[in-house]
Length: 159
Image: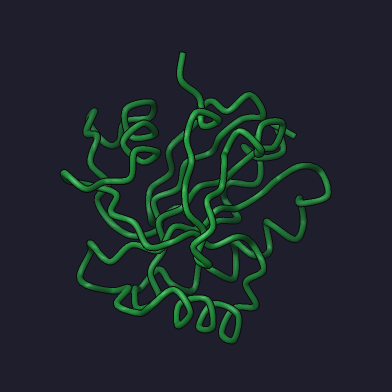
């Protein structure tokens, strides 16, 4: 059986991250964008991270430019934007594709584990969120319009 611990990703500094190191944490994995109508969700994601990080919770942001070219910047530009405008301190990964032939393997796996509306696997827009339990299993998929604060009760159940 596959879990998130079976994947490696690259952070926004070009360093490989073995997600096996995240085992034992509750994770919220989000495809993000800096020029999207949902971009203000960075505030809520950071608030969740600050509130629960000492209890073993982490947000992983994966910038993605597949939806309306709303994440055109470099890794450094994205990180600076997130820090200056939203005070983001949670980990940001390297820019990824979440759909198509070049989709990140971790996103392909999560999409298969938690399907979207009417059983679809594709991600429809920026700020789709996947909640992962301490064992590395996908628990739930949340739509872009689901505010970070609306996820609290789900996160608290897993902590």
